[in-house]
Length: 141
Image (tube, rainbow, N blue to C red; front, side, top):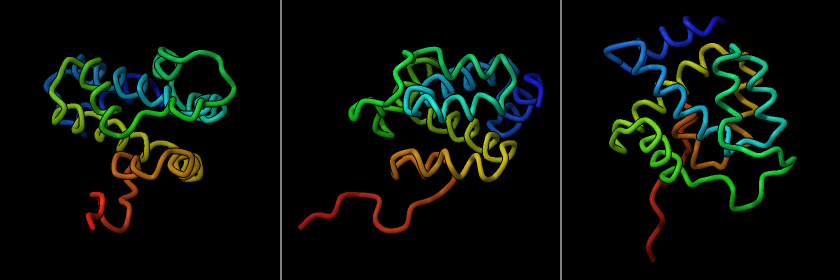
């Protein structure tokens, strides 16, 4: 897939008014996602993306082999980071991140996407198109 095709698909999926808005959503989402993936998963995902998108996965990460335990953001922190990088509200950040993730799910080989989903914390399945079963809020006793 070429970068302009990725941008067009994200623009359609997210209902963005312009390609520039889609590019901003792609940049914000992929750079935040790159922070939560192990180097190996980043490399696998990057191998499936056009060069312009591939570089975004590495924008805010070091070269560590392993993700420190606290490194992966909670889903809400992820959305906040996307919102800050795209300069949008959390509600819009959620919409944008889900649009980018939806396109990635459609264009990546199913096995690759499944592997990414499995490597992420379970709460990310909401974002990655794999709704979790069971309660989404903490149970109160």
